[in-house]
Length: 216
Image 1 (spheres, rainbow, N blue to C red):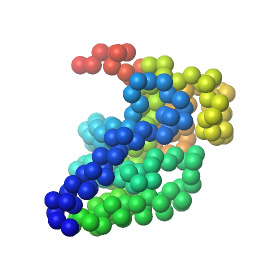
Image 2 (image 1 turned 90 degrees about the vertical axis):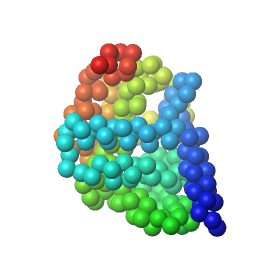
Image 3 (image 1 turned 45 degrees about the vertical axis):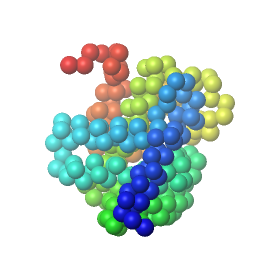
Image 4 (image 1 turned 45 degrees about the horizontal axis):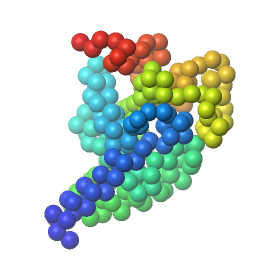
């Protein structure tokens, strides 16, 4: 196969992510004309990583992180966007790793790209842990933006299996709004350091959407 064909094949496969809507928003019946795709999430988490590196001056290789985040959802081009409430981490890891290996096997740099993907998934280096925190916090922040637009009605969740999660139920019964539940869930479940926790708390206590405040 020619180099030109390899370029096109990889591009076309990745292009699928523009049309894969994030499953979490569908599960929560987010009512909006356009709901975030996986490709939009990738962009969002890369921009969050740049901002976190800038303001908190992490000692990390930001270009490696941006590259890592560019491919961290690559497996979803084949297996779709499966959440932690649909499949176990171990099961998803097997499916996703197989998918990523298949996608990258035709590229000359495929092994190097796959190593970056696997590093992200293992969360055992400072870059991968930083990237992982960005990945999780970005989702929490997006929930806040949707909540500020009144996109979710908690009374219309009859078919939402996520509502059965013990932590979710506890937070909602305690009176947390939908997005506050998301943000507090993240703080309880994910290994946020003090800086990521501070940004999460800021989002809980403040309106963050452009229409709610003036950007400089």
